[in-house]
Length: 186
Image 1: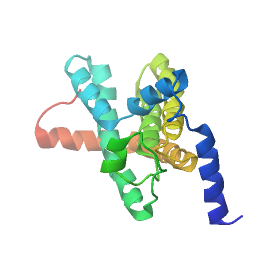
Image 2 (image 1 turned 135 degrees about the vertical axis):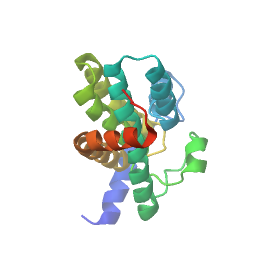
Image 3 (image 1 turned 90 degrees about the vertical axis):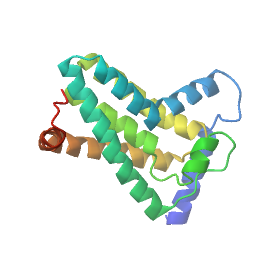
């Protein structure tokens, strides 16, 4: 099977999952989940939560915040190397205008990174919720026509790997940052 035929299969499968042009409950849910993985939302929520949290929660919030930030750099670098155009469509103009490249899905990568870090640092009930939420974000991005299936699969794998690596390297990085800014983060 050639790369071209794989990409065509990917496009056909993605098109079958698409609900962007079909009003109804599925579209409404897809819009909600597609937006729930937005980086600005997570950054704002984590910063606001940090001000009102206990030390244990601050630990999770700080690691998530910097994990999302680092992952954004990795995703953007890959997107500009691959330069795969997003599927055609009307929905998601903000995504199409600010980031015309679809591979890998930053939303899927972010959702799976959040779930991986949540599994290690958050209470079990939250980790379970995050593992239900992450695939729904990914599926919603395809359903709303801003990604192909392969984009979200690659994003999910990338986010999981970066999350696992981040969990290994964050302690010395946070110590360094706290020394640099003279402020304890949790």
